[in-house]
Amino acid sequence: MPSPSIVWFRRDLRIADNAALREAVARGGPVVPVYVHAPREEEPWQPGGASRWWLDRSLAELDAALRNRGSRLIVRTGDSPECLRALVRETGAGAVFWNRLYEPAGLARDEAVAVALKTDGTEAASFNGALLFEPWAIEKKSGGTFQVFTPYWRHCTREFEPPEPLPAPRRIPAPEAWPESLPLRDLALLPAIPWYRGFADAWSPGEKGAHANLRAFLKNAVAGYDEDRDRPDMAGTSRLSPHLHFGEITPRQVWHETRRRDDAAKSKSGAQTFLAEIGWREFGHHLLFHFPHTTENPLRETFLDFPWRTDDALLRAWQRGRTGYPIVDAGMRELWATGWMHNRVRMIVASFLVKHLRLHWLRGARWFWDTLVDADLASNTMGWQWSAGCGADAAPYFRIFNPMLQGAKFDPKGDYVRKWVPELGRLPVKWLFAPWEAPRAALKDAGVSLGETYPGPVVDHKEARAEALAAFDAIRGK
Image 1 (tube, helix red, strand yellow):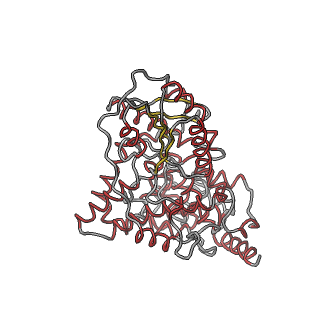
Image 2: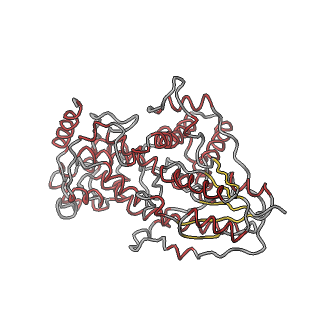
Image 3: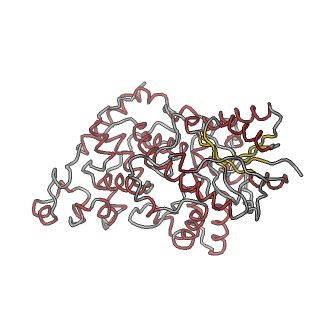
């Protein structure tokens, strides 16, 4: 019988379409699934509080799925190369397989693990289990790296066809004796302050929850995705982002299931727009792979001279949803309560932070990193640099979202704001997105007292816009 194989799980917490697991089963012999908790190896972007809550639930779901197939998850903590080498010695494993990660720290760790294992004479192999396209495989025909999404995605979809997903193994051969494993609770993943209590009402981490989300979206929302995806007051998006980040579902599964549904429904528009959003995730990883410094520094170097402010009081008002701009505050409160925020609102609150408040985009990126259940380094970096105007395919510097107009356009009845800013719930929609403009009688009838029951605006929109444009103009000539 062949020697055992170790499958090193990280952010591929699933059984189906798992190339590393499939290779281990195909090799023959026992399979030892392993998770090594090593957050220090991901510094300075180790998982934040919301991500740790999700990871705690997802690892439990993965262990249950493995047990249903005659296996289990071995949990260790410490230095990844040394933990894996120790497990090779304990189990007599002849091979270690894993699915690749593409962040700078992850790439460095994978290289260190591969070198250590091969030095010991252990077979080591990694696979693409997270993306449709390998970042290094995509380049312009003239050479160089894409920095604009549309030509990037056009090239990808013309030149490549994502392979069909791999089926889940029915059984996973177990070793005669299992190595020691830590209980999941010993990882102490849950934050000390239980601000995550509402997350369980909003999410079902794990492979089953991921596929249930996809089925519901394809059945109920994909046909109207073109129009509804920008409406935070509607259930018009897939909410797959945390499942994709933790690898509970793969972009290949999403791609092919959407295409099959699209062909059956004979309705192309919504599905194609949705798949392009999957493309934006790919584009983020493409950019991060080629420009790893952008996790901390702007892609456009002129922004190193941008005159950011360092006002902690303004930052706290933004974080707590107390800016006095209802659509901004609704988004920040949704984030705190559920670990997620609608993408249109993410753009609004990000624009507000970097352009109205002129606070450094990294301060927003780090808050999102700690509070989002779908905190993904590639997407987070790309999104914040897009909003700040300092990244690839970035929003023009003169595009400064008007939070009043954005609220009225994308939350036309005010349902989203009323849900997350209930102190404004009785205010007529005419004044809902700019309550400081409401007549005293309307505020009184609605039980609103600005500065008491709800804050007044922390900055004046027109003044903040003018100051932001002046700041951008100051670096344009450099």
